[in-house]
Image (tube, rainbow, N blue to C red; front, side):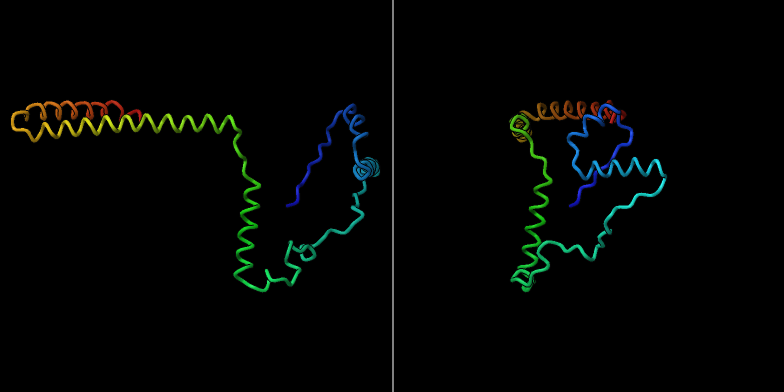
Length: 161
């Protein structure tokens, strides 16, 4: 892919003088042409023709090799070229970010596994209470408490969400 560069016209005089030492000959000539054309108010010429899109060939399409003659191979090669180009665009995390995010994932996983284990133990105990003939009242009291807590939480939080 071609990169485009933008030129800022509002540089300081000091920065222009210090940058002259590191400018390439091409940039120096272009800057001189810009200054001269600003004085004469004539449009700039590029000194070269603009290339057309028909003249630019993509990489690998000019050869008559095995890749271009077999459609399946051509598709596989195009796929892997696309994968390689996408992998170059990836911004990988640093070692510290990877370590921190791994610890966050492990912490959340452990916390939720403990919470779900406790919830499972509670429900198993609660339903065992329901099927014993002498502990039906315990089951009903717990069910009423759960219903009040869930209903109250919904009533309080429904306006905030």
